[in-house]
Length: 457
Image (tube, rainbow, N blue to C red; front, top):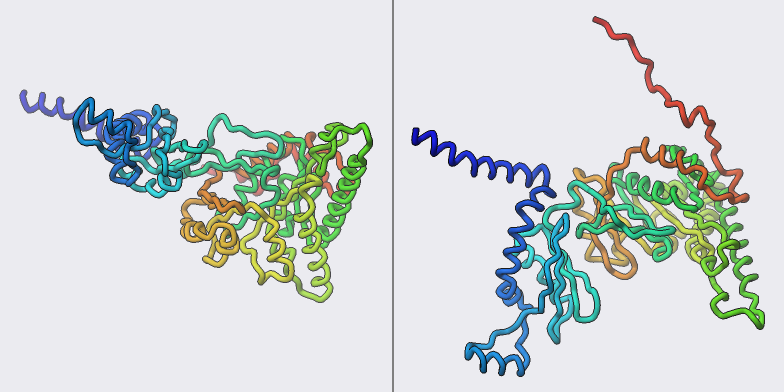
């Protein structure tokens, strides 16, 4: 009987431990909320001073404080850590603000992130500067990129789309107003198409004209044709579409210049240098041009194709240089992008401020994407595993970079969103002849891949 009671007493803790181990692997968010959060909070509060001292983040106290300590306690005066504010728990970790001591900078705290991670038992620690003298530590309790779940409340807006999740559990927002043009690189099955789907479906719900160039016979962008204002599926069609976009850009510049005619009574705030300064009733709809597999525009087989290639590349460069003020933005995608593609490739890449690098086949491809803006991110991009499609490194000309991962979105769901938002496509007469008009029967009726065969007993 005593052995049975002992077994019953031990079964409870063993079951709880087994459940905790299972939850940590299968449901990390549940484990963090029930076990990880309390444990990490206790570690942080009890070991904060000693951990900061071990990381070299303490400074000598002021003379006034040293005199006060000696007068009241008569104990040895020790270095003081940055002042800590209240802990703020989140569904993925903890946040705490630190007021830096005189002489400290955010880079000092960022250099100790790995030590803080081990000391407090969390998955990662990230540092963000709030204002001069104040930084925020973002403690992430588990690997949020293993199973992506986008935050519920994300600040967006026109031409701002939350398209992926950062490794610090915040949303990566693709903002065309801040970063007009972007280059997206990735090998086959790296998640590049998933990034494109999320971005395109996010823009589909906005009053934005979407234009596609997909020289792979339209296999990537054709499912979104109901929402696209124009689609080119052959290099010959792209050679006809790009001059139309150039003409549209020039017409918009003429509109801006006409508005800039400075009259004696015109207020200063009405003088503008881009379409966003125009009155809303005069402002043309912004255009986002998606170029899938840009290398297909560079490859040539004959002398005639080479002349057409040079014209198209020149037009793309002009759109990248001048399109922002006219409300025309580029999203260029490919598996590899470098000088070996031909004349104008390096110049076009230099105009693409934003960079997204998925898994690539060689380090040279990662250098093409990130080497000129964030060299330290090249090694990270070169080690992305194949078992995590959608994982990428994003950077911009400011030198900052971060790891992101795009949530899964099926092709059928993305196509359905584009069909539902087809009426939101702005009316741009110049692009009307390039629009693919999908018959209603093809939109609503699914196509059977194989005829069903009767079941046999």
